[in-house]
Amino acid sequence: MPMPAPTGHLPLTHGHTMAYYTSGNPHQRPALALHGGPGSGAAPGYTAFFDPTRYHLIQFDQRGCGNSTPDAAHPHTDLHTNTTAHLIEDIEALRTHLGIDTWLVLGASWGSTLALAYAQAHPERVHALTLVSVTTTSPHEVHWVTHQMRHIFPEAWQHFRDAAGPDADPHHLAHAYARLLADPDPAVRDSAARAWCAWEDTHVATHPHHRPNPRYTDPHYRMTFARLVTHYWAHHAFLAPDQLIDNAHRLHQVPGALIHGRLDISSPASTAHTLARAWPRAQLSICGDAGHIGPQDSMLQATRAATDHFA
Image (cartoon, rainbow, N blue to C red):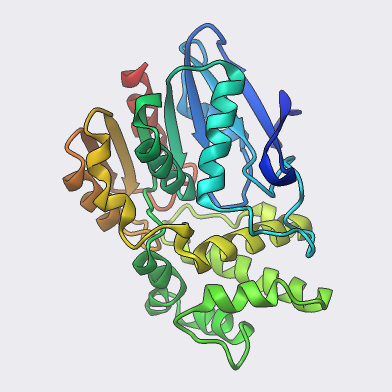
């Protein structure tokens, strides 16, 4: 199910425009939900994490994806002004535009990285954090998902590695794919996007209820997603190694909930566990039957319980 039409469009720096969406009760506590990817765009499924009578939910399409412009799928769209620091500025621009003082911030997968980075930069603006399928996009995590996951899916990884080209460094496949996705030949770009998204759909397939992501059948979505993920992963989210763990002390006044699937092997629970140890105000819940996000009831229930608590 696609998102409804944007509530509005907000001009940003460097020629970008943000599409944002609101739902729920505008008279209740504001909540910001940050989508994954990078590049997946806002999704209607995030509304299930919130009681619509108790929250005013805000979502937006991050730079280059969804209904935000310019479109990262276009090979001539410059990504130099698409970094984590720019996205943090965008969040603050949206908060100011909507006249919000503080809000609950929820992030899932890549969104949890962005939520952590934003909250550490602006802790005074965050009422509470709810992080689902916790990642920090550290060099170790990027290497794990692009290289070490070959031990779980060796056949699929070999195809993923081969599609990067014979000269690609297998320890830096995000870099290799980012180059292919910038190639002037559209056939090269399309082949790279297909291979990258096939691997994305594989490394999360570690729980019995996994279903292929239907959005990867859309060539435009594939290109947007692949280009933005490889851009951010090749630069480790434009963060210092372990920055979000090392700076967890900045959240000493921010309560948090960390919800993670035990079967999430591509983003192992060790990251969430390490973060919880560095952030005493965070409560860690590991769901034994769940993988990486997905429609698993235990993840949904744990996340909804957290947002209900913070309401």
